Image (cartoon, rainbow, N blue to C red):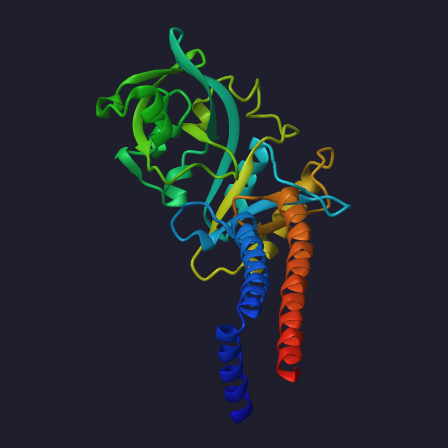
Length: 309
């Protein structure tokens, strides 16, 4: 302890006595710490940033794993229905797809990205509307009057943040939807890097996702997010989904689904992108940690040399 205290006192005296040493120390440690902080922040944003939802730690994504280890994150609507009806581990199983559409009237419209979602999307995520409301079970049925929830961004940019927009009609492609709510400004959908401007129920989407998708088991276009029931672990959910996956493979052997189903935490970055980012960031963290170590060793050697002289 005495030795450490003496070293600390010597270091403080040296910093105030030798400005060159002070500059070298600050630059060396600043470079090492700054680079490490930047990479850790990048890793946190890419690998661990979750959906802006209630209790996001309970959310998982479903993937099909291929023989080469790659992950396919899309399933067909019939498979989604079977997973939803057959599982015992999710309080909600949410389906999401994306579509590029034209929002607004012909004389005042813009191309936007929307999420076409199952009726339990907002309730399953625990995301409320900032104005109006989100979808009710009846809203999500085919044959009902089409409804939509707008993003806070498009509400401001295209509709001037007019509160009376709730209850009015907007045109999405060729269909007219009634705006029932505005999402919170912090909610931007379920995918990293995508600016989502509206949400419409899956069964009211018309031809936005192409023709005849409801009965097409070979058409994989939906990404699934499950909310684990209280007390259910990721491992227990994986076991339950393994059984459902095996049943689907046996019942519909002509459909390609990969070799297994895989559950992962529902971060914004997903699937193969997340795997690639993870490999890159592990290598980057190793490199910047080495930079910090070299900076500390050089500073220690410089201090010893200065003391000896």
